[in-house]
Length: 143
Image 1 (cartoon, helix red, strand yellow):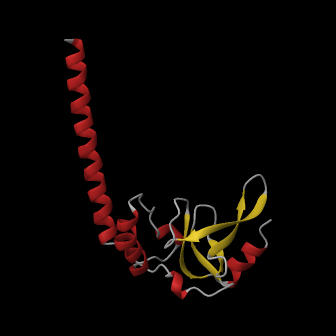
Image 2 (cartoon, one colour):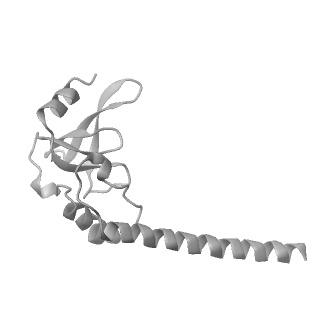
């Protein structure tokens, strides 16, 4: 009898969890449908974890429509301002197909990350404009 009650509770709990997850996903999708234009890197929302097809067909175009710079428009060795977990300025390296940036991990060091169109499961850089002189200077003097 106790096992049956426990099993019913687990099934009810799981059904409620799935319902809440679905409602949350619907709210996220609704927000992305009406994504405002990016003015600062703080305006770039967290990118949800979804399958590759949905990411490329829905989320990438929404980022671009809100002001994120497509990979095809990036200029080699140019500094960009945008959103990344560890930095707001990154230098596009076309030959390597990555952004280079300073990060702090047991001291400052140069690291690399992908453009948001090349999701590899790790944090992605979302460039929204060219970096200005002050941002580049600050970036270059980070050590």
